[in-house]
Image (cartoon, rainbow, N blue to C red; front, side):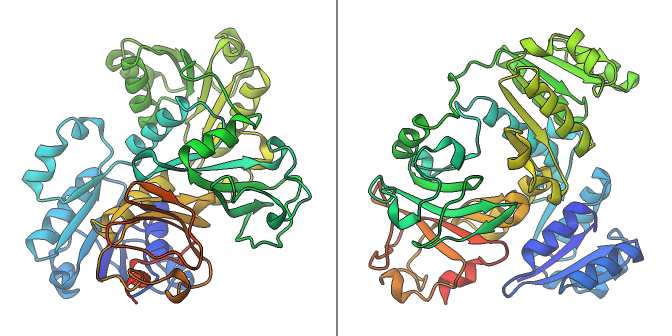
Amino acid sequence: MKIMIVGAGKLGYKLANSLSSGNTDITVIDTSADVLNDISEQLDVMVIQASGTQISTLKELNIHTYDFIIAVTDNDETNIVISNLAKKLGCKKAIARVRNPEYNEHLNFLKASMDIDHVINPDLATANEFERYLFKSNTFYSGDFANGKVTMVDLNVANLPGFAGKKLMELDIIKRGLLIVAISRNGEIIIPNGSTKILDNDTLYIIGKSENINSLSAKSNSLLPTRYIKKVMILGGGKIGYYLTKKLTGLGVAVKIIEIDMRRCEYLSENLPEALVIHGDGSNMGLLEEEDISKMDAFIGATGFDEENLLMTLLAKQAGVKKVIAKVSKPNYVKLIEKLGVDIALSPIDITVSEVLKHIRGENTVSVSLLLGGQAEITEVIAEKKMSIVGKPLYQANIPKGIIVATVVHEGQVIIPNGKTVIHENDRMIIFSLSSQFTPEILFK
């Protein structure tokens, strides 16, 4: 597969890093020589210093031989033009990052008229994830798979009585229909085995039948009353704050937005009349106290500054807010979340890369989720007849180390597989892997 990425910012780099494994040839185009030099030193990709809107450059690079072009520059209109030009020159599929809410209102028209196969909107996707977590009954990571039949959660050992100090083989977790697929320890992911000992501050990634996960969660100390969210304070009135507020007010939630830019406040007040927009410095705890932060059900840190988001969500937690969520873009900060006490940190980059991976990997890939800043990945795949993994026991499938078929859904039944488990056509497989270990080609070898 050949993929061209136009725009070498944070998202472009993460996409190149995530897609460069397997038999994929990646070309990265950007106008900045310094940025391209950094990428070429760290990744095995081809870099070209040019503008993606240059038709001559696209022709010279034989864009007609590419399977995908992904336009992720900082400008929506540039991404739209690049995608349209590439398609007209023969590129098979085009993906464009488009963030403007006005374009989002007419997305189908935009895609049809400009011949764009898929539009990614990191801000809207992040707002959707914020909304999903707000209305979950827990304060931890939770991902749903197989139409809700399978759930994976991360739970701190402190909330799991009787786990600390034991080896995995000493737990009865398998008998409960559950599997510990990974352990997060000091910000690093460990793939455990039966002799792995669980330590006090570990976070366990546990997957299994949803009702069994719910039973385990009920015994932890991380549950909240369902749908108790009535009042939310959002720090930052950027695009994520805008999209999230629009969703929440539509559900009858009272929203307060704290925004430091006066002109942006005027825009928000005009376009989000059901929300209360406060002009002020959201890093000023005195202001937040004046706005009754302690009476909020949830606090969202959604500014453009990771440090501010983390600090203020921690202060909100100390002020008595039940659920706090921070937007964090820097991978190094994501690793610190479990130590800091923030309930959940969401990365727009990881969310967007997950969406792109799902689209590129084809119709058999149902979902992709990156964990811990991309250190690990969980992928839901529908088995097809031509996959080499189908029709044989897993111990004969030659699955590489670092990749775990964590759960199989066969004819509606959730199975925690072992070496003798046979994958059948149309089974749903939930696959856990370390970063860059999994590619669809592995299933066909």
